[in-house]
Image (cartoon, rainbow over all chains, first blue to last red; front, top):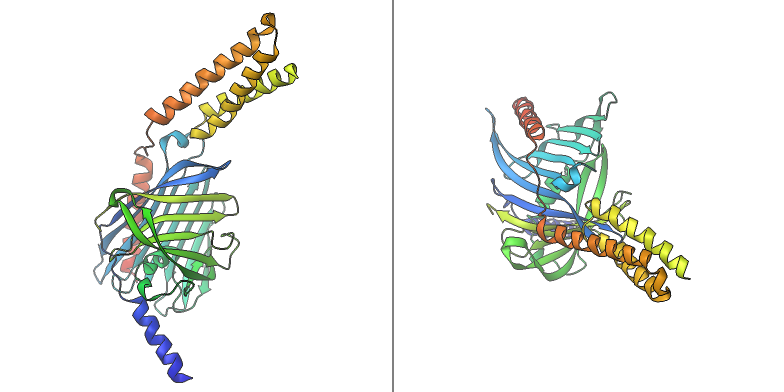
Length: 251
Length: 103
């Protein structure tokens, strides 16, 4: 039994591989939302990375920003920022922040991952309510949603067979959730300025009411060294939508 | 039947105008298309002397259709520079560095 678990651990380490996320990478997506069966472009999502140096160590800053296109700003302005500071080698998060502005609704959230790896100090604030602070216990491998997506890009899916899953744990809205990523096979999709690319099609499932449907939350990442997410389809309680890569630079 | 199709055509034409004003993109084609079909039907069903109103609806729907096509072709999806947002991000980054120094 011990041998089997050792072998499985070894295979898992081989499959996870090493981080390949570079600094100064910039991926720009067009976010569309399904309205009456037609995809309507709503916002631009930018995923970028940069290296931050403090007096003690360096961090890779992973940043996601969503801004509505100017034509939508008058009706429903969105300015969302999700960011995390991670170890450049292991992508282990140290600080995660979320700042949401969606049509007047605001929410901020900050998690400081404690050095023991077993808890986070969280502070959050919704609109004009007072700030709440608490310590949330987490597993040693638990990460935030942004670093999870980047960690996903380091997984070696070439060793996976269709139907095989990788599991992660994330902390979101001060709760810990298991996330399962199922490899569904290879597909060729349009990847903005990168042209057509062969991609790993992955299905993301989480035990949360924030994601709906089976195999309806999908992500296509390129089958190359860069593992760029080129298409993301999501199904949430208020509808469905997608992010399509329009420009990739610094990869 | 004639009256129902005229009333429906008016309602869909109004909906088409609202969708055209809102940044809903190609979705506006749906009510405009229905308004055009219903107004053509109304013209067919009407006597020569009663064709003025459906013709007006058809004309308005057609103009709205051209506006939507023009918007789809000529108006690019852009994100305008938001100085307040950029400043907030800069401040947030300075605060983050302070937090990271303490870790």
